Length: 478
Image (tube, rainbow, N blue to C red; front, top):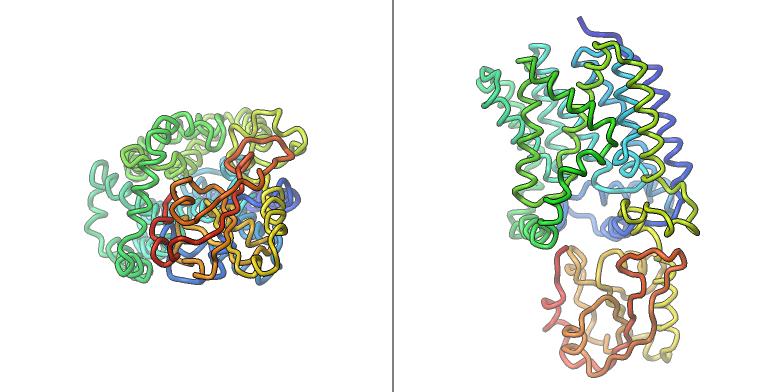
């Protein structure tokens, strides 16, 4: 019999989460990915070389609905993780959890480090977690309720998820491997399962067509990421599984795996996690690629804690877990003292959300030294999409970059024989211009080390080769 929904406690937790996230949304500043998505939102397309279109289009929607501000951009992620809280609680309920298990699932999910980060900043992760959880919930309903029509709903969510990140294929492969290895194998013969797969394929088709017609740029991007960061990501994978949502959630997820394994009906979802984790390790992907499955295991762990009569202990532990995660994940520490804490070293989002005003000021100061005639011809070339996005947000004209999708929006005009360059190697500078001189360095009032802190800004003159003939050399993926 289906357990009653603990809608009061779940709603309170979800609403408080989104409220807190919006209250601190103005902390520190834009993250570099948000600045990038803002630029991509101005170029609607079925896909980009490094990602599908959903997150940039959510940025476009937020700007249209709420204005071009930092808080406006962060409304969609705050709402997305509120939905995530509800979905994980529903997963706990689907696995037989009562009010206590559902409340634990909601609290642990809301207070997890990656939930808070994903809800605070507009990232692809912000929507991916909810989409994975939705697909998992419907798959569990198909397995546990003997109502195979739920495979259609799971397929629909998987199809939509392909417009956010292609990583949803890890969930599909994990579930398929689980059904083959652990059963129930009779599900593989269900026409509803294959109908759900067809729904997913039809919904994802335009995305797939984009990849085919553009030479599979996502594969090229994935290869670049694996080459640049693969070894580091493999080394971090195991310890980061503990950090993703906090150690308490990780421990409860381990118990959740055991609970799922003991139930023959849902062994396949249990197997999906090690399969997805293994594929991530082999490919050198990021440690958070299987985070959606961690939350499913955690929900099962909440049901196990409730069944064992450990409700109070679990709730207290999850409260402590939430406090610790919030301190590291949210902009609660004043920027003036942030550099003296371990937060920037642990939280990349915090580290990469400071220093943009200083970058903009440095470039603007260099441009101000030019004559009116030079300023009319000058172009600005940034080394990465964060720098490009920051300068574009500040209103600096004629900004270009060869990073990821931004290369597609070049080359600069041939009249651009005066250029301000940053984060560009000497080989490219000297191969393009007759002279280049350092004209400034980017400061960082917070004293936090990131890619832009202390970066040299160059002023180059004398275009020696046409931009159209050399722009291919400026392209890079990371």
